[in-house]
Length: 254
Image (cartoon, rainbow, N blue to C red):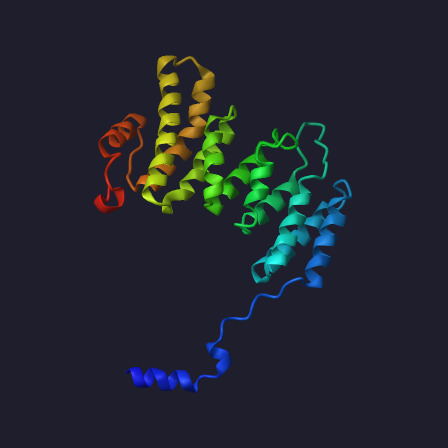
């Protein structure tokens, strides 16, 4: 068998035994697309449709690009968030450019992680909950160590929508080492039991009830993902944690 494998290897062309060729880099066509994006995005919303079409093209180019082109693409998308847009008369944000940029950046980790960290909670976009949710969820998809602590911190945000997004995003760490999963699990459980306790203490507290209704489902889903265990009631989750927090969840199949 060894002789046969050696004969096959010797018969292969030299090129077939070499490392794959590096991705093309510093391409003028990529720079041209990034420049086009900047031009369209800078037109105060008048050419956002065209800008989004360019974002789609850059998304296609990214996985086939070298490190310099990747950095250039991410930088171009990052700049989209600096462009000013006006709300409608009804107070609806004109955020399609931002949402498109955030969605594309979600496919560009790890290069895009610093962009998410810089715009989550940024004063320019803090009130745009739809955008904040997208940024948070895409940061979770990146599964980066750098993003885990900021996501955990968002569990204490005053907005239940932000809390819920952070809870959902933290479920993406279901493939992390067990200690990390347990740390995230404990933080999520603390929030769930805290808000549920407020509801139980004062059933007339509509703010606590509304918060619980928003965050409970994503928290429970993430608890299930992290622990590979199925529960739904917060009290049952607390009992399960008390019993199993020191166990090897993967080995015992809890």
